[in-house]
Length: 390
Ligand code: PLP
Image (tube, rainbow, N blue to C red; front, side, top):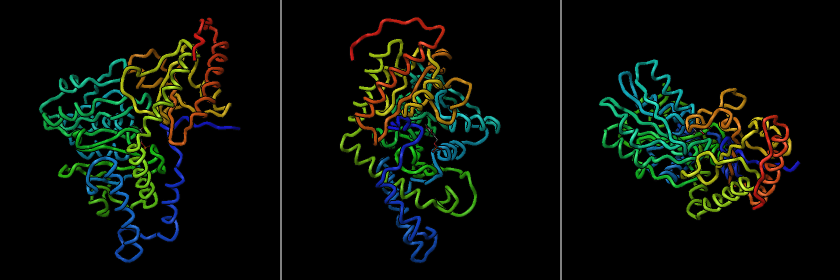
């Protein structure tokens, strides 16, 4: 069966070049990067080289990069590492659960947490951030790009507010890295999380940028790896893969490939809306990462749509991969003001570097057919006239 993968916000396929770069570190280059002999020096050099590449992607210095096991750990390290009992934290209602639940845990240890709302486009208002500040606000954590809608948050404005208030600013850039240019100095953040498997590196590796001079308590105790910020023998093949993917992502951004991807995404979105009717883009009107569109199709069940499309070879998602199978509708879409039935009728299409124009054309036909078929089966649906424009 011809298969089209449009769920790159869940995970991306490893690029062949990334796999090639990693391969020797599963074989002949096996040393522990902390060993002082030849084998250790070889892997140490590879880890430091990867650190330089990740730093170049984020606009920081290599010593400000801490390698982790992924985005979840990077988020938890930033939040638990910067805050203590008696502090106040500001976050938003559309964060990934890695941030939301880390903040919830902080409440159990005596930290006050303010969770800000978003508007109908899924945007946090910087005015709300300023209003929520307290004398003991230690951390503001607002994501750079949302995983479900792709909506980009006003992180630079939030960074300025944090600086004025003397608070730390962390941003979860897991869904932004490699898709849009990132400059940690321009954002003004103290910490920024990324994850390898969202940018065509392997699963199980990520990084946290920590601004030089920022005091961070580690999550783990053990060896002095990663300048004592993350104990544990480094995942050398994973880190090498992340470094190679970061280098390739930066080169692609410098070549303007993000605009090509936005063009394919926009074509998919425009044609779906034109062909299907009674559908709308969640997050429309806000700036978004170039690879994501999230559309609600009235009178359908999103899970049924995902299954029906999968049977035809098209992989999409109803939102966060980790919450599929959950009965609750997406907390992100509900926070944006969608009704639960609209949130449940929403589908996320997310493109990757491997996506080509033919994939979009193929998916378009199947999406239109599938929505029409599911609506025919829906007892509440009465057919509306649709535009013939494509
Ligand atoms: N933050 C965001 C915005 C994400 O989309 C994800 C993964 O879906 C994570 C954090 C967690 O990253 P990881 O899967 O590397 O733990």
